[in-house]
Image 1: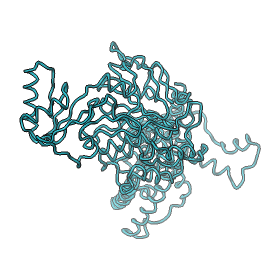
Image 2: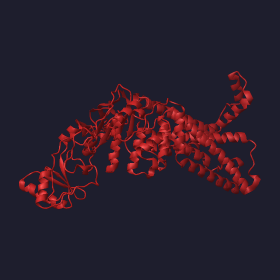
Image 3: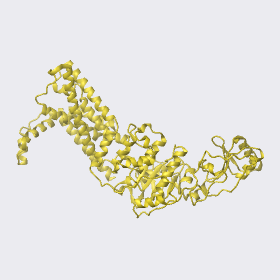
Image 4: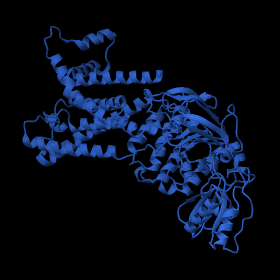
Length: 637
């Protein structure tokens, strides 16, 4: 059950709030529609409910606000817009990444893909999907964690009639299994046809909260649907007779040979067509101004159609009524075409739908013709430290950006090392790193920094984690996973770069330039520290500033801005030196360093004492403190 109480958005300047004191309930086992014209405040209301926008009021999901629920995605499945996935990622890769994020087994992907009908398209890229397929993928993401409630913003917008009917059947099936469904729409026909309860917003305020039958009877106009090959002539005759009789009749020409007549009856229209010898293919009352393909009611509910009612569900079945066979069999009722009432609903104090309840609901008469939903998740996975790592690995390997960047770095490093060797006057360590003196950083360090910046920058550009939480969560577990993956990637890139440069120099110039330096150990430590430090700087800066560009700019700022400042500080006058640092450190710890550890400590201290090492350490420390401060500030809010 969803209870929204006093939802009010924060007004901007002198403008009134987009949503003002909206309160309503969406009960389990029922489909609730949030109806309003564009700009009425539907999307803002949903964002306030999901705590994605600042404002006043509170929303309870089965008695608890969303920020008090340990796993919000398992309580509410959300579809607010198009799927925010990387265009180059496949459908299966996107769902697998979301599985790792919400902590459900990977086998859930195949179950959900089969339900939403994407089995044949599971290897398609997100950027190539049509509007209908994108909606199917969004619904799959919402159903992935087996949520109790579904919250959707205009789910059928832009879909064809058949796709919209399929989507609402899925929503009806979820409600029939005891779930809660809340969706927004600006089409009153859709609300009356598919929902059990309709909540109407106007100007940001709640103006009506009605059952679908009451909504269709009090807020929609009944009409007569007419199909005829002579629709224009029949419409003109109906308007002429209405003016002569001084009756209020409105004739609207629809697509093709279809008319919608308001203020008249089937009998009057049929008599007019009979008198003038006009062929009629359809003549039917449609309560609530429902479209030409309105869904037929389920068992136990009143029908909303009269003559040729089969035409409402099958466009292939037509009834030709000639001038001597024009009939009007039965009067229309005031009940809208509403889907079957849900069964198996549970109260807010009860647990979510179990496998037994779903089996009973599926076996009930009302749910017999509804589509099958994915099986419930019997065992909830406990929070695991491997979950963010698993998510980050699937995110990094799901698109080709990382592979393309690595190949570009290796090729450019090899060509640059050959060019530097041809020019001469370049030390061998710089040849192996392909690092010209005039460049702030070598290609490998820039590539590692770019991959680190992409780790968080792509999260904000294509926020797979933000579908139900607004912004990417800055959790320390996610940060640790990104830093670990960035470190491994940078280490591999550093080793491969030196190996490729050595091989290229050997192939072009022979053994003269392919030798290993004598101090290779300290040089290797410096080289690995540089690439890993650049990767970390990119990750932290992109996480703070929410941009890949800002992350790469922070990496470039280290040699361009911070290193000169450190050099200026270190080259200034000094009356003290740090000689004997390792001996004093050993005395402080009162123990002997095993395996010559003092030598390694001294080597590390010398690396940090270098201008580039000092600048990188200072930058990483500042970025890490800023990240932790931002995280703490978000949690306090």
